[in-house]
Length: 445
Image (tube, rainbow, N blue to C red):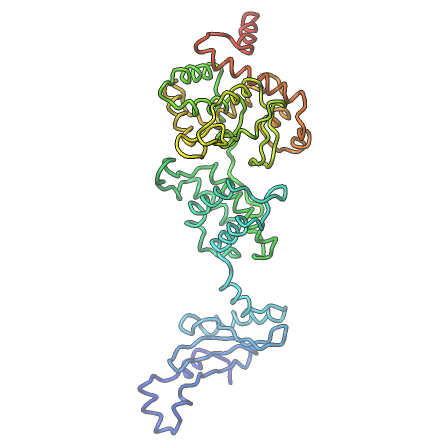
């Protein structure tokens, strides 16, 4: 066969069905012969050819032997889409790769069956929930973390990247996804509590961080060849000013608590405990009586966001815990639900109503936690001590506070007392130690 050209390719094209039926008896060819593929090979580039089906559909092909010596045939493209010269260039590139050890047929099959982002996310959630995947400090991934991951996957990842092949993703794709989340492309109304999902830099950065972790787990176990999010630059949220309550605002909140006759006493006590301890919202609401150690004094959490912990508490916080009435049917929770045997769940809305009465804005349970930490800092306690009070697990913190030392207990006492005085200042008009100190400095100035 000569060099494949347009004229030669056109001459090889099978005749239409009506022409073939008329020609069959005249040429003496059998029906089976007329139904066979027509294949012609180029005499200049070994392995390059063209194939026509009996229907008339034609495509350029290459045939080669892989590293194992097995014969493979790869379709380059339709004769309607490629010229003979364009197909020749493609064939030369592919055959050059074969000479260097590649197997384009196997690569094409692998690409066709490669995992999508949705596949890898499903795998991650299934394995993490069963405890087969470990998170930080080689511990099973916490249920709360998995719930957040599931929400981010459903809300942000699947709509924008779900059907993409993981191996086709680039760093630019990941950062473009991040920009889309920041811009609110995945924003949507949310049913029930919580308003709407609006996106933003914070959720975008956390979602990209989650994706990096998921891909890293999959790459480590060789489900994917590499982590496409490796090296991603997460959007900065450094310009965000974290809200804290001033001593005057704490006094206003305390006054609102004392005048909130229509609110649940359980919710009011839970809000006070958040401020007096810096505990997270769910650490307070899920707190069980058996975890309280009045002798230490501390709370012995069997599990937290960072694992099992001892958390020092001040005397005002301990007193508040010990005076809480027991729920019905020996409910184990310090802050029991109003109905049923669970824990109280409506504390956020109670806090919102209190802040409305006190004319305070943008106050959440996390703001109470940050306020506790800020007051501790104002009082001169070190970052390491504050981290121990909050249950943070920076390097050295958990090791140093495996047993509660006197310095940590003293800090918990002093901060809780300062906050307790501030809560009561709205009605009693008693200056706190920090307030008095600032007033003396002002007089000297």
